[in-house]
Image (cartoon, rainbow, N blue to C red):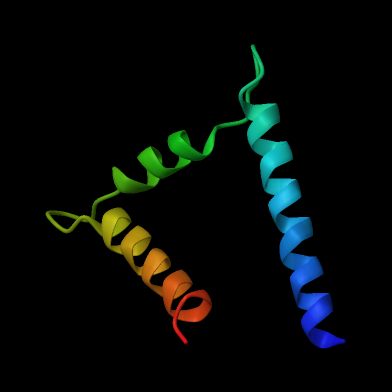
Length: 70
C-alpha cells in the first residue's frame, strides 16, 4: 500500500513538473525554465567558492544515492 502511494506521489510530481516546464516554454511566459533556474543557481558564489555548483552537485548526489543505489 505504501509503495503504491509513494509511486503515485512521484508520478504526480513528474506530471506537475512537466506542466510547469511546458508553461515556462510558452511564448511570453514569465516562469523560468529548469535550465534558467539551474544557470541562476550555478552562478551563485560566496567569495571564490562556487556555492551554487557545490549545492547542485550535492543535490544530484543525494538524488542518486536515495533513488538509484541498491
